[in-house]
Length: 82
Length: 391
Image (cartoon, rainbow over all chains, first blue to last red; front, side):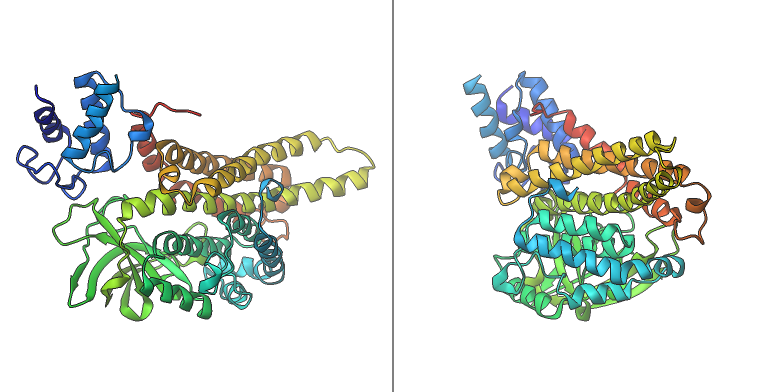
C-alpha cells in the first residue's frame, strides 16, 4: 500500500478523529481534528507494526503527529535511514 | 531534602521566610484551619506581606526571579507547618509558572504579571470539569471570542480556594467546534467572573483549601487567552511543576510527622540514658522518608536543568519520570506517616495532644487523588507502549 493511503487508513482505524481521515488535507492539524494523546499511541503502534519500523523517542512529540504531511515525512526519514 | 537542592540566593531567603512564616503564623493556626475547614487567612496574609506570591516572576515584572528549585524548597518547608497553606502556595506557584513560561510573549499578560507582583494577587486554577471523568486533558466547555472579548461557562466540581482567588486559570476547548482535547487556557480575573458555588468542602483532609465546586461564567479581554495550546503548557509546565510542588509539600508534611517521632526518641534516650529499643524502627522510618525526599529533590534538579528548553522538558521520558514520582510518593508517604503513628503511640493517635499525627495522615491521603493515580498510571502505561529510552 502507498504510504499516504496507509497513514490515512491507520488514522481512520485508530485515530478516532471527528472528521473523515480519507478526505482530510495533508496539512490539516490532526490535533484540531480530534487526535488525542491516547489515540496517538494507537496510531503509532499501528504504523510501527504495518511498516516494521520503530519511532525513536525523540520523534514522540506532538509535532510528529501534527498532520498527515508531518507524519509522512517523519516515517520517510526513518525508512530512508533504516 | 534541602541539602540536595541547589538554591539560588533568592531561594535561601525564600526558605528562611517560609520557616519564619510557618513557625510564627501557619503552625499556630494549623489545627484550627483543619478543624474548622477554613481558609488559612493568616498564613496567606503573611505570605503576601513578605511578597512570597511573586518570587517566581522575573525581576523586571516585580518578582524575584526565583528558580523552580527555590519554589520546590519553599513548598517543602511550608508543608512542615500547615498542609493547607502549603497547598494553596503550591497551586498558586503552578499558575505563576504557566504565566512565566507561556505568557511572556504577550504584553497584556506581562502587564498583568506586574499587577500580580504589585498587589500580591492569589492565583487559582479551574482545570477539572463536570462531565470529563477527571481527565484534565479534555474539556466540555469552550471559549468563544467576539469583538475582542472572550466568554466561557464552565461547570467545575472543584476550584481550590475559589472564594479567595484574585485570578483563575481556566481550561476550555479552543472554539465551540474544537474536539475535547484541543484546549486553551484563559486567565480569568475574579472581577471578570461570576462564581456560583455548587458544593461545599467538607473532606477528610486538606480541609483549609476550601475546594468548593462552582459554575464559573466569565468574559474578559480576548488577549487573556494564552496563545500556546494547553497541551504544550501542560506537558512543559503544568504537569511537571504540579508533581514537583505537590510531592515537595507532601514530603514536608511527612517530615513534620517523622520529626515528632525523632523528638520522642531523643527524649526517651535521655530518660533511659541509652539507646531505646524503638531506635531501629525510627531509623527505618527515617530511611523510608529519605528515599522519597531524595527522589523529589533529584527530580526537581533535573527539571530545573531542562525547563527552559521546551523540547527537552517534554520528552516522553520526562513525562514518565514526573508521573512516576507523583504516583510513588503519593503511595509511600501515607504509609510512612502510618508507621510514624504506630511509633508515636497514644499521643500521636489522640486529636487533642500536641503530638497528634491525625491531620498529617488525613492530609496525605489526598495525594493519590490529586489527579488520580489510576489516570496517571494509565497515561504512563500508554507511554510505555511506545517509548524505548531509559537513561
